Image 1 (tube, rainbow, N blue to C red):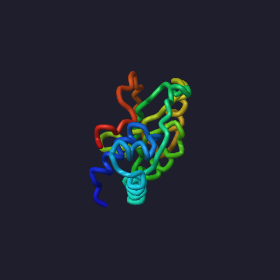
Image 2: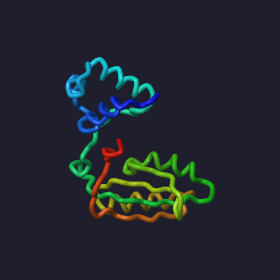
Image 3: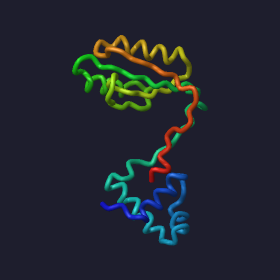
Image 4: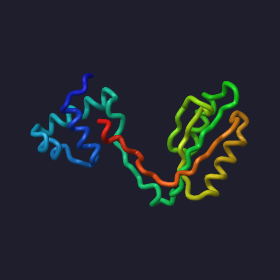
Amino acid sequence: MKIKELDVEIIKYLQEDSRTSLRHIAEELDISPTTVSNRLHKLEREGIIDQFSLKLNLPKFGYGLTAVINIKAKGDNLPEVVNQLKEYPHLTHIYEITGDFDILSIGKFRNREEMNDEIKQLLQNPIIEATNTSVVLSIVKEYENSGLI
């Protein structure tokens, strides 16, 4: 599917506020609500829009500590390590990367003790060789894709 300029304009409204009504978007773009609805359904079917979701303010829920954890897998165990990491609820992002480490993960924690416990648990895993953790001092930009589209 070729993405049309109209699709991009609709997406921009939804990125600003995903609760924006289709009627409001239609009025702003001077098109019918049915057109907006049809374009959105097509974008979903084609996999361009992956999902509509809710963005939580995790510090308001007590998860005020963010850590970047680099992980090195032992030998050729990378696929297994990645699958195991998916089960760690504190790890919100997991990326396979190049460089000295195999995986970069981002974790959200309530405090240092919780973070420390999770890192110790990771290090007890026999297929994880090493970790390197950085504590985030200030979040400048997070969960943003505006500007890309």
